[in-house]
Image 1 (cartoon, one colour):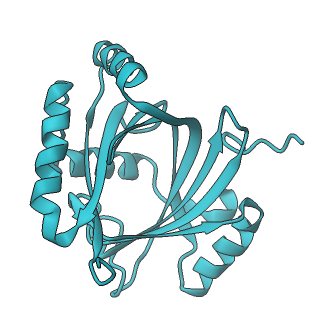
Image 2 (tube, one colour):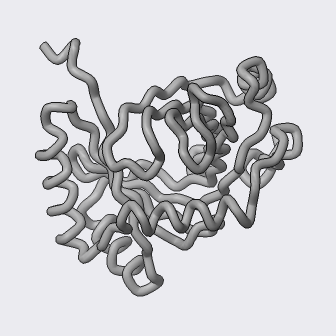
Length: 211
């Protein structure tokens, strides 16, 4: 009945040049279902303890995701926890949807666990759905412009899900970064933009305070 089966998320990413972006967008607009266009900040928490690991070698990745849907003008806030290193392709993910007004409380909650800093990463993103695959085009952030493709599957079907994702990407001539390449990119961004206290994070790029 699937109740006891663990769901994992298989995620691949790669660079998106200006030329490729135009082609991919044309494909998305004709063949995919638009899930929206967003301004987003992901705040990757700076964990420094034995149980959670550290930024460079996390055992659990904790992040707050603030989104603003450009069309509907809707704000969303999610607290995400993923098991395993962020460079791993397949990981379990736990997502809690919170009311945007409780951002300060979410910071406070994390502080009670000794987490008081984060690395804010801004993006402009567009999401498209192709069956059980979601393709996101991300630009305007600290990392190079890139695409992210993900599929959710059970642990048992991980290999099948992976093959399906790769077949889809091949169709679009999208080449994923290797685990090592992706690690290098994220580590470079982190070195150049280290974690800051939650109170110093400016979320106005995403959530303007206009009524």
